[in-house]
Figure (cartoon, one colour):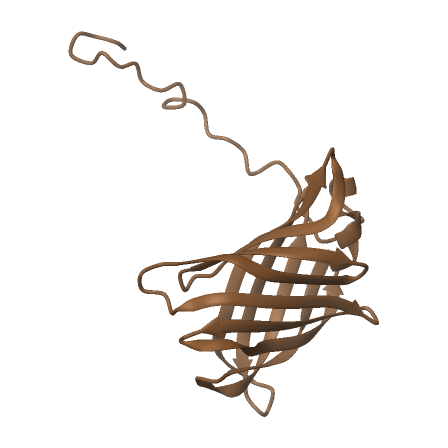
Length: 198
């Protein structure tokens, strides 16, 4: 109620009833949920739930083996949601500790509503790094490089990155290079993941 003592009316949502759970489907399984947006057709092979193993390293650290799960989903709009979580694994193939996590968006560039073959990718990590990649889609190959890297004040110094993804014999393969901690662009991660969902 507006009064002389309280001249601002309460917002309309203040006493509104609660809402139901999020009502729209986001999926990596193309047999359910909304139709795939036509702009995403070139990225169709990437949509799914992927799991596998890889090898990591950098000039400033020792090499390590890791397991990884990548989920790439859509909700009918012209972008993909990308989520990755990894864990270090021992020589006996046992989990040792959580490793890198990241999430973001793969956005095909559209001109007059049609995909150009170019890609804008935003990726964030819980370690305080956000990267904007510019890339190209070439068949089942996606290549991207950082256009911008933003870091929180306490994040490690990452200055550039390059990623190459491909679908090879039904598997998702990738290689990731990084420039960081005063080191030039160097190999960092590579993995092979198989589709376990979608």
